[in-house]
Structures are given as C-alpha cells and as structure tokens.
Image (cartoon, rainbow, N blue to C red; front, top):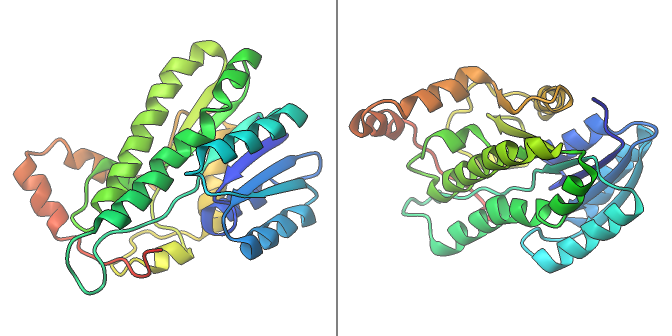
Amino acid sequence: MTYQSILVTGSSRGLGAALARRFAAPGVTLRLVARDAGALAASAAACVGRGATVETALCDVRDAAVLASRLQAWDDAVPFDLVIANAGVTGGTPPGGGLEDWASADRVLGVNLIGAVNTVAPLLPRLVARRAGRLAFIASVAAFRGLPDSPAYCASKAGLWAYGESLRARLAPEGVGVTVCAPGFFQSAMSRKFSGSHPFELSAEAMAERLARAIEAGQGRAIVPRRIGLPLRLLELLPARLADLATRRFRFTIADQR
C-alpha cells in the first residue's frame, strides 16, 4: 500500500529522518515533528528535494496539548493515512558508572512511551471514524529483554511494543492497521552514544527501507534483524537466573544523556 499523508515524529535525524526520506515522493504530504530546528529544516529540505510537500512543527512529544492541537489541525487540512510514532531518546548507565538516575528515567519514559501515546491518541478517533489508515510504532529489540544498563529504555520500548500490540488487536475490526517495529542497531548519533558492541548494525537508510516495506505490506510486526531480535525474545523462555546470566554479559554505558 502507498500512503499520501504521513506523520513522522522524531524526524530531524537518525531513523526518523531516514523514514521521512524513504516515504518522500511527489504527491505525498509529509508532516515532520522534532525539537531541533536546524536538523528538522535540513530533514524537511531533503524530503522536498524528493518531491514531497512538507510541513514541520517544533514540538516536544511530551507536550500533549500542543502536540494534539498541531496534529488535529494538520489532519483537518489533509487527513493522515500513516502515523509513525518514532521519537525516542536513550539513557542508562553513565560513562562513570553508577545507576541510572530519576531524571534520565523520567525523560526516557516520557519521550519513548508517553510521547508515542500523545502522538496517536488525538488521531485515533479520526482514523476509526474514517475506517482507514495505519499506525507504526518504532519500538526496539530492547523491548524483548531488560538489559542491566538501560532499565528505563528497555521498559519504555517494552511498553510501546505492548501498546502497539494491544491497539492492533483492538483496531483491526475498525479498519485501522498497526505495525509494531523492533529495530536493532542502526548507525545514528544515538547509536554512537552506546559504548558496547553493535551486532548486525545497519545503516539508517537500510533500516528505514526494511521497516517501510513491512509497513507498506501491512505487516503487524517488523523485527529487524531477526537474528538479534528473536534470540532476545527466546531468552524469556529461560529460567530467570539463566536469562539474567546471559544479559549480564552484555554491558555498556550511555554517553551524553540529553
């Protein structure tokens, strides 16, 4: 399926910008939301260069009222048929060691999980009324297993995965599709903050292409690549002691937690 009116949050850089470029084409209206004005303008320009009509909004997805007002105004003008909740931040064990602090956990949960809910909630009644459209949630393979050095990040992505799974089952009879995405490592500024190994890392463009194909095909789930996502899912079938032992071998720190 092709889409003509698309929202992408967190679209100023990384995977969000790559997804915006992937969907940009003549006849497509893209609405891009992010917090960095310069990076957002550059992302928008790249999409315009591919022939899309682009509108942008500087907005923190945690600001539910401001975000809802902007999204509903856009939907009034050109109704959305694809909503990609991608905005995300990372956090966890700092380079000096120690535990993740409250401020980091609050920011990660607020952007990654509550921000995604803030994105789709104002539009859900409209999509249901039209009996059309698709939601795509960009979670992570970190949703499948809590890792010792990123408890809030894993929790936020696990919550987002469950939220998307719930909505998919609920909305299918209403004519609204849902794709829940679990990307592994891809090259980005966020990824560079992660000090550990990056197994099977893809470029942002390659990851965006694979996720976009899954969304266009109407798939309910997209785990990319499966060779890292599926083993993490299978860990949950082990006794807790053995699963914890396996994950304790995978240690890292997160730099520049802003």
